[in-house]
Image 1: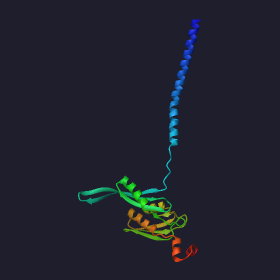
Image 2 (image 1 turned 135 degrees about the vertical axis):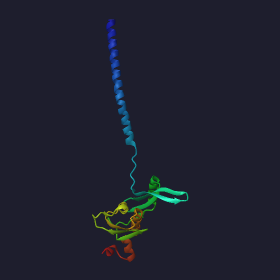
Image 3 (image 1 turned 60 degrees about the vertical axis):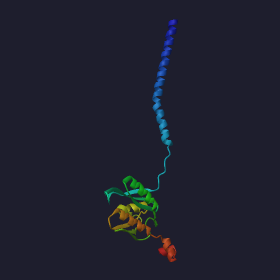
Image 4 (image 1 turned 180 degrees about the horizontal axis):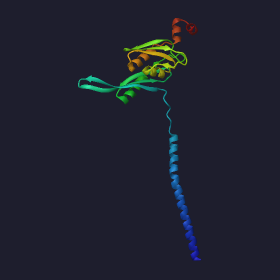
Length: 207
């Protein structure tokens, strides 16, 4: 009887030991899953920052030199155009690459131009000048698109104009072209302002 009791006790201890080993293995297998679940929850709980309505477009990054008393000073010029595609656009330049881009974006937002958009184009033909460069803009019908290239196209796109004809005259410098386009957009006048000055209604002016 004592031998049988010993055998039963040994079998029960072996079964308990086996069960504890299996449970330990299951717990070890579940640990990474639990950690992963915790990580997923942490990722999901992170706040998603809203996207800014302002878009930036780097037109040109160029190395420039300045002659000083001790020799030549190297720096970088970045031309950046900033706009929200809702009638506001700006252009700026700065030096030293990354700092240049950040500074140009900040300066561009400070010097914004409000563009009077008529339907999806500009109200009337206009020519803008900056330095030796000049840009001619003409209204276009629906579906024409932006007929422009280089810096002129970037300025018009970020201003929110969808249909326009343009021609760059004079200097081929991107900075001059961008500034000339901005000067042209500044000089645009909405129909209601012109009608008010002439003492006419909008219908009389458009007819």
